[in-house]
Length: 92
Image 1: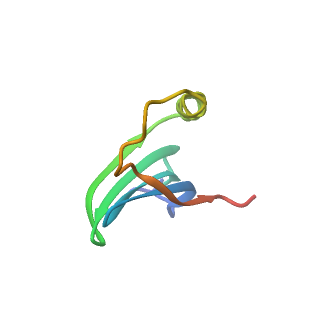
Image 2 (image 1 turned 90 degrees about the vertical axis):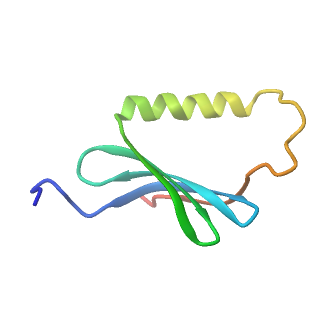
């Protein structure tokens, strides 16, 4: 058993709904620093999971990328584009 393993803490998450499923992007801490956790589900069953252990500098860069991109001018939206369903931020 790993002595460094702690309870998983969710720092924040965003769920995007697509048809009968969706995808959740989360930043978690399992005792090994920041981890980007992505899970995709369809009809309530998780179909894909990905964990990316990273650094706070990398998280900041990814956040800045998305913020900057959100200000951009894009072509028409895809008819089945993932839509924001819920967002949860850690309370201080």
